[in-house]
Length: 122
Image (cartoon, rainbow, N blue to C red; front, side, top):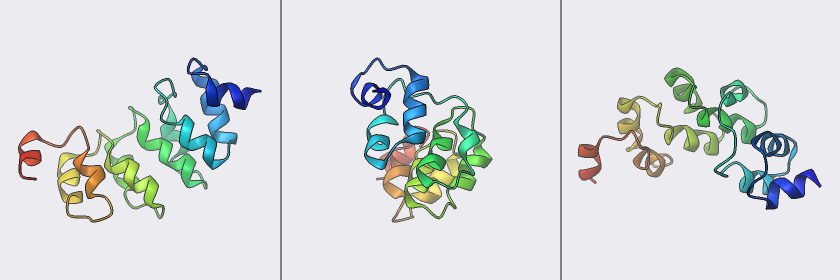
């Protein structure tokens, strides 16, 4: 029942969303972590988790240090690296460098911290 509530009820509490995400299967995770009320505070604690789907949450934490986000760019899992490339706390110099990386360029280009003048260069 808790899983169904988290999957289908847009008003599901943030704590329930995280609980179901951490215990869930991939199809649950893909649907839940992008919800507007998914909790992001404190997710940096998952940066060393053995599960890549959990590790990527660390990049969503608004308190995660730029150093942590940069470290996630070296993660063996491509999805973790992609989420890190889009993290607004990533230093601008790294965002610009990632524009030349075929695997991460699209995500770096969508980073809200990419300077406007760099966006205009296409």
